Image (cartoon, rainbow over all chains, first blue to last red; front, side, top):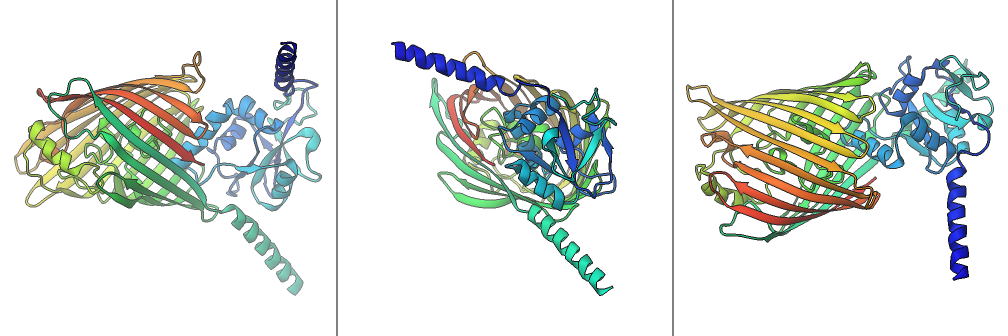
Length: 160
Length: 369
């Protein structure tokens, strides 16, 4: 019986630890990184959301947007889905399946398994856009200001 | 100069190859397995209701970007029933993105007539309830399901809402009306049913040569909340010495919430005989409510649907469609994120004293993504 109580205590404790792991520590900033050929320097939160939901598929110069999103169980994906798109993983999945089914888009966002993979693709694909923790931005990458603000500014909107 | 040209060629090749890796084929698949059993009073059989094993259907949806603005879509279907196994192409679309808000396409489409036809169609996993409503049922003729032609789509932002506009023109219905179509599951049963429904036993094939259609859907930008809209379809149906003008309008009002959804739609069809034969009016509609029963399981979604179709007995173009009402109560349980089990108790009633039938319906629906 004592073993059972101990196991249950550990399980409950570990579940709290997992649940809290995303919110502990100081706030982190999300950075929007684009291929260097993208002419935009700044983007609004609203326009960013339109890219994330596939309503905006081209940059202003007509280059098609290739959207990269990290695989599940990553801080970047959790923030994009939970804070910006306000969708659960299941809703996000159904949302893109429906868009492809209705032939609005040929495919959903490209899933990248790691930030290094995202960094490689960002450098090679014109019009590519990805999201990084501000501490993990690839060297030499072009980042967009959000509403004219950078992660160093006090009111930067993508700080979570 | 030569080195510059070579460098340019190399860059172009790199760009081409890197883009090409993204233009890969995407596959989206649906599969469902249907069955049903009768229960309760069963004084007179409704031959349109298939019991036991109903069908197994696999839908393959292939799509690929062909370039920065061109994309291609193809949807194929394979169905197995007790009577037959067959396959057919459902959609074949070549699409051009004019800009962020507009697209132009040619090919074979789902007709943008009616919300269900456009948003769920073959995607049983996408919908909560087991089957389509009567007005868009598989092989049914009330609403046009497919057409060959062209379509212009435009999204117009309006504050927190988006107006989705579809305009199409084409070669009319790509299925026969007034006769069981090729993909009708129970052709023989429908012909027999005509006797019960009061229609003439003989059927005449009517084909349409042209059609224009449109759909407007006002949706929240978040895709959750209140949405409404409507659609229209104009076509001429032409048979052996018989001409009919077909005019269909539909209206829908939906609420898609975090944990519940209300779907309502009504469709009215008018068939006019130009040679002074007058016109007939037929109506069909449904109202469905589903909700997440989180207190029992976050994967359990009970639902209920009432629906009816009221077909004019004199309507020559709907000889294979019958007036009936249907009440369905059921539940969907998501076994895994990609598969769902649905059970439903259903009562069908044919109009004018026709037989009523109680059935227990079941479905296993899967998505490959």
